[in-house]
Length: 80
Image (cartoon, rainbow, N blue to C red; front, side, top):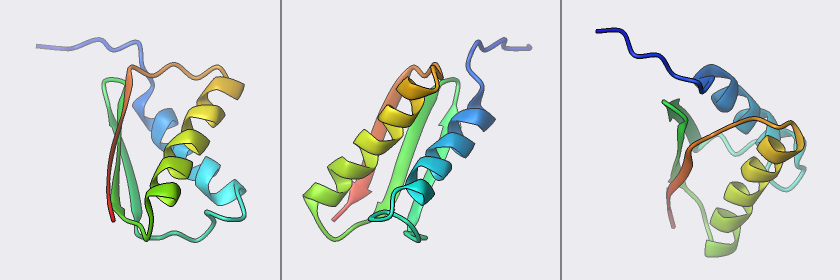
């Protein structure tokens, strides 16, 4: 069975990583992983604070909005 998705998962992953690298306070966080599957973006890894966890998610969402990139959902599974 072939599933047709209107979401570009590779683009979602790439732009999320780009968003993190473009923001000086988030640049170089190699412990953050991003995957996408059928428009659901999963962010996982370990961060040092709740503020940083929230900032990562907001930065990715802003990137998607600015570039009009469609996604279904963001799952922020970062642990502290």
